[in-house]
Image (cartoon, rainbow, N blue to C red; front, side, top):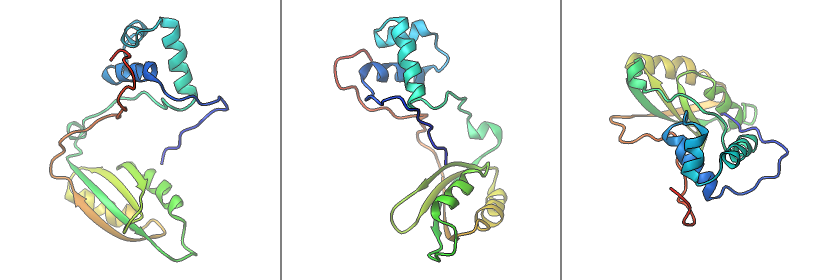
Length: 172
């Protein structure tokens, strides 16, 4: 899984100005600094400084393109629940999750609590691709003991990021 790199900068809590900047970036990651500063109700210099600080502390770890999977031929989405081997000689689940995250079809991977140990979201072309993905990629990762596959029939809503509500009367 992608780990955030944090610097030696002292962390400070994200405040309403930061949230306003993040909301403006969420609406348009290519927005000019004048638009971002106006959305947050701060000067351009303050907006620059806040954005730089959020990048440095890992609050913002990337600005990227969000691609519609269907448009590029990935018409099937599946969640896979994985159990790891209780054998102490097998790799630890953290090792397994990092191996799974490196597979190109894996959009998301997480260590979870409960009956299963790991959850992954995979984007695939079709059911044959899914079969191959499970048999060739997932089941061959050392330490994966069992899988359960849940097919996504319809995606209702997809967000690039979720932000908390603002705490005061700062601009929206």
